[in-house]
Length: 635
Image 1 (cartoon, rainbow, N blue to C red):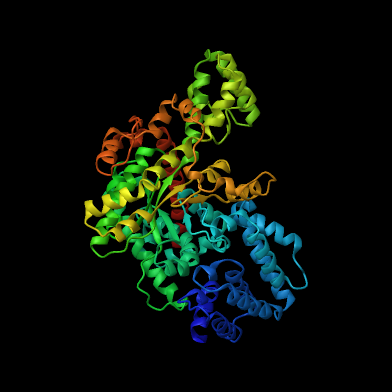
Image 2 (cartoon, one colour):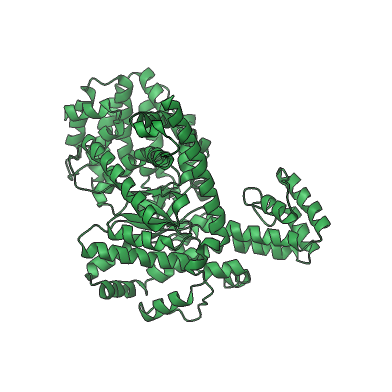
């Protein structure tokens, strides 16, 4: 073991050393394995700070639920933690202080401390024992995590959670978070927060003569490499638990190039290439973990932009090859249902061919759907006023929001000022005055804002009901088994292997009103923090929220929202989908309307256009940055 541990230290992979106890676990063997690992670490010849960092990371596996997840018992976990704490007690205070300060700084750096890990760091730092910072850090981390709502929700199987960010995953893994999403915006943000990523990319560029000779020609390849570099820590962090579950959880989502989202074959080839690169990286990391040459695919799935019909082919083909997908840029019931059915077809083909059927996701971008609906309503209000009066109100709103008024037509200026980046709510005092000026009551506007906040959850609840309501699950198992000739056991896993993934949250209720089985919430760091803080309020009751994905709002919410044309497109099925679900799967959809978004119309939907434009702009800006680094390396 000593030589393997030394190799991991030489590679700078202290987490791989700490995670060795999670590989091939055997109940009752943990204490012996920890003793052997402690001996190898302390006799490795590594520096004191590396040894201390490794000891704390090993301790995190025991104060968190990692060791529990792989099957170790509570008593042996406690005994193992005592051994680790005893080893930490022997570390020089100055060394331990430096290492703990590093952990705290890293935790606070995630989203500039506006995160759950930042909240943990703030609370730990305030109570840290300067005389024994290593032991104190682990004791306080244990208390803070185990007293939090995410610990309770995950431990009691209320719901699953993921990180909608490229950094901070190591701390969330210890809660039991089991998914991570990225996109071009988040990859660029990771490079902003962690300057060492620039150095890693430069080192990769230095190996490629073609990239240095013509960076613009190979720009997309360089961006893929940069994005994967930002993902390597996440793949590594999740790797031992992904191994334990055989890719049934702990997957990392990699977004494909948004500039070719409408090109199925090119996107599929990009995914295959990234899958091969990730496989090569993980083969090396698996050896550092002590897993040897384990035959397990990368724990990576590909975010497929669902704003184009090409997403259907990409989703089906990748899943048929045992490569998972996470459909994104989707907002409507019709989009999500169609793409889940396409994923099921691909998974069934994989099962018949003896290929793996892995955990996949159907993102529900509920927050962005809500923002789009709000923006449309705000812009309509200004459009209903005489132009001179509208301009005065708009200027007043821009001033109050601190927004610089752009040039352009009234409509263009309204789009800018009323975007979610600036206007967070329709019940803003100036908006209420505008509403009254066009004959709408302020009470109606307040009601509309309250209803809008529920629009994304209404979509998620419909999608979840279609696939995962108790009365519908057996119908899907029968359909999958009969339609694709797979066993009922395989059909059950195909159905269970898909999680609805609420994303782009705006308020804590976006999480708390959509909890349940086959739900995996991907959470931005500041949203995780907000949910934790809400859970600490006196009137919070988690018991009332269990299974909330199956709860219903009072009927008036959907009825009022249904007056909005884009909500109709988001909430309804298409005629073909309704017919398929009723005829083939035998789901009762009496009373459901069919004004949903057809695949041909996906690219034209307002939410799709806005998000696609944002992702493309972020990708292009990141590309310019990466090409600039390549030119720097090339001199």
